[in-house]
Every structure is written in structure tokens, then in C-alpha cells.
Image (tube, rainbow, N blue to C red; front, side, top):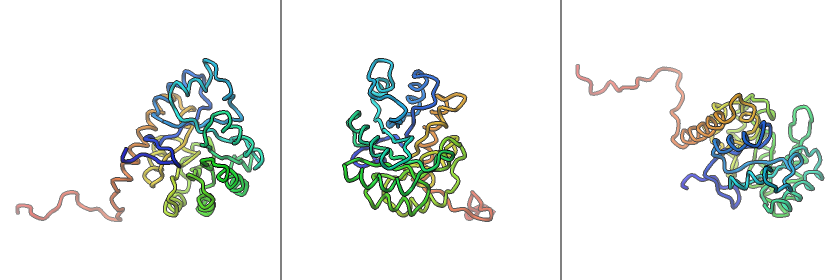
Length: 257
């Protein structure tokens, strides 16, 4: 409770957000999601039929798990498509939560910053709790914060690349300039990437491929859960400063000569 993550009016004890794509079946999806300890799962509305509430559907599984659904506008390339998808998500799921994605390039899947900002302005005005996926650009993140987004979600690296954090210095600047939650989204490959994001002061990490694409997704989900926890504790504890030369672990003063 003392270190819960607050996103708008929502509160979560887990700082790991996970996706639902790329698993071989619903059984594996359930096992990995449980192992991750995540309380929020993102679902691409344009790729999953969330209107299907039947037994054996993804929606039924998430309801059974008691997990918060974070619908996203993945696959949208225009402001209009993102707005339409967002409004449909609220109608279907009766939640104001939204991960906003407006993609600008089909090959890299980098977000279109201008259109993302345009859509964010409209959706915030309509009462959505907007979590925008964006480039790790401090200026873009500041603009998204200024229009009323509930968090910013800068990428670590291209979606699904597994390259890890390519620009930790930008993340540090983003963290420094905003009071909003900073949730790293996309590009995480392994547990050390997740831990590093948390050690930099980020408030959470969202991932899918790093878990679902692993040889053992359930074990990787456990590793990511533990990495998020360890990284957060390390950040809160405060690391020692880096030094060029050695420093003795045991003090010399008071030793018997």
C-alpha cells in the first residue's frame, strides 16, 4: 500500500503491465499472466473480439482473473481511427482507461507524435484516462502531460525488438520533468532490462513479446515480476555513487596495530 502505483484514480500494487498477444493458447496466457503478478493487461481492440463474452474467450479469462483491462488502439494509423477505437473500447468495456497508440510507420511501428498528441487532447476532454505510447522524447512527453494524460509511456526500443533500453538518459530527463507515472513501453527483452527501467526511476513497465516469445513464458513472467520488484526496491533504497577508483569495504580506522 505504501508504494502503490497511482494512474489517474486507479491504484495498483504491481508495476508490471502485460499484454495478451503471441501466446500459443489461452491456457498459456492464463499461466503466464498469473505468474507475472500483473494487475493490468492490455488488449488490442482491433485484434481481439472483446464483445465475445462466452466461456473460453479472452474476456472471460480476464474476468476470471479479476484483472484490469487496459484497451489499446494498436493498429491505428490516423487520429480518426484512434478516436473511433477508443470510443468503442469504452462502450464495450465500460472503462475510461486507454492506452493510446497512433502508429506513424508500418516497418518500425514508431508512434506518430503529432497525431498521438491530437488524439490525446480530444480523449482527455472526453474523460478518458489516457496512457499514450510515445517516442522517448522529453518534449513530446511534456506536451502529453500538459494536455492532461494520466501517464506517459515512452518506448525503450522498437516494439518486439528485445533491444532493451537504448537511451537511458532520455528516460532520466522524462522522469525528472514530470510528476506523472512514467511507464516504459516496448523493447524490453529480458529481466535485466525491466530492472534497469525501474532503477532509473520509471514507475512501471509494459511488455508482451519478452514474455510470450520466451522459450518458457511462465518462467519468464516470474523473472519479470521479480525484476520489477528488485529494480523498484533498488531505486527507493538509493544506489551508491559511481567512482573511478576503489574504495575499501572495511574502514581502516580503529584497527589494532
